Amino acid sequence: MTTTDSPVRLQAVSAPDQPDVTPALEELYRGFEQELLVPLWTEIGDLMPAHPRSRAVPHLWRWENLLRLAAQAGDIVPVGRGGERRAIALANPALGGRPFATPTLWAAIQYLMPGENAPEHRHTQHAFRFVVEGSGVWTVVGGDAVPMNRGDFLPQAGWNWHAHHNATSEPMAWIDGLDIPLQYVTEAQFFEFGRDEISDAERITPERSRSERLWAHPGLTPVAVAHTTPGSPLLSYKWEYTDRALSDQLLLEKEGYAGTVEPGHAAVRYSNPADGRDVLPTIRAEVHRVARGSETVPVRETGSSVYQVFDGSGTVTVGAHTWSVTRGDLFVVPSWEPFSVRSEASATDSDSQALDLFRFTDAPVFEALRLNRQETTR
Image: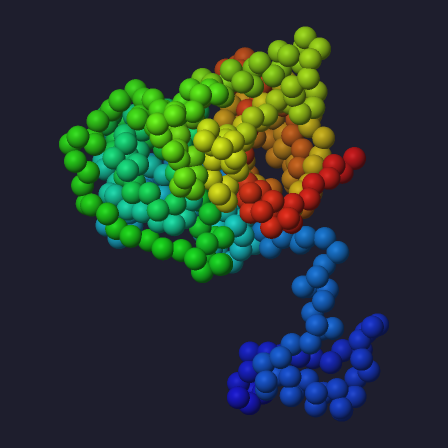
């Protein structure tokens, strides 16, 4: 390979801690280019910065705009083989137009019209669904029909067959979260088509899935069933239990007992009932409730997060960006960007009279690699 064909381009510059610019240095750099070599001394500031510098940037997507565009897509874009899902991904403005919310996380609004079925498939990407409004869709995972209602969180580990069907006369939207960007960059992904149509026996509408009947009993593990596959065996975490847990934390705080993250800030993490770990190997999911008038301490951490406002209103600050947010709005917190929130919710815009935030993050990956770090910024 000649230096003109090489993708490596090195420029000798006169700068502190760099070698003197001489004909010998120029000749050395041309030799590096020809052999596809890059010296560390020209790259260390980019490869080994003093702290994380995410390629993503903070950004906010308004739910009303997402829902309007998804409804338009519902009228003109079919669901079926080829596209598979009417899912519209958030594209972080700093990631070159890729459908990635952060370098490791995918987030999308999915929209299913009345009576529609999304065909069966499976993939190695770990996924979940979270419902901010509406009901009437059942996701069918391995033949188990799981109802989707407002506030429900539905995790699904990779390589499980799944389809969706809308059993009502109204369209329904929800958000999907996956680790698509992570598996894309690590070149570890697989995908497989399933049946075009699920059976009549699977196209049912039970109030509780089989997974809930077996695993959704607090503190009780079924003796006859061993769970050894990745991810949670519980396919639906109902909002009523999440809501009660958050309310109880704030009530305990008022009574003078421990239970909240900080004053006025309750939080719960969805966990695997079989082992207590995160619900998915690469994704952590939580719900945070911030009482009206409370403000969280600014925190920054390695790894990135996507938040959706489940209920209420408030002001969020991510790095140098501050936004007013309301139900459904989604925003990104990149790695090592300080994040804080102030609740302005009330009975007029929130069932809990607080600001409720759903959050998912790549924290399990960073913890497994011992790269997790967190600090408050005041």
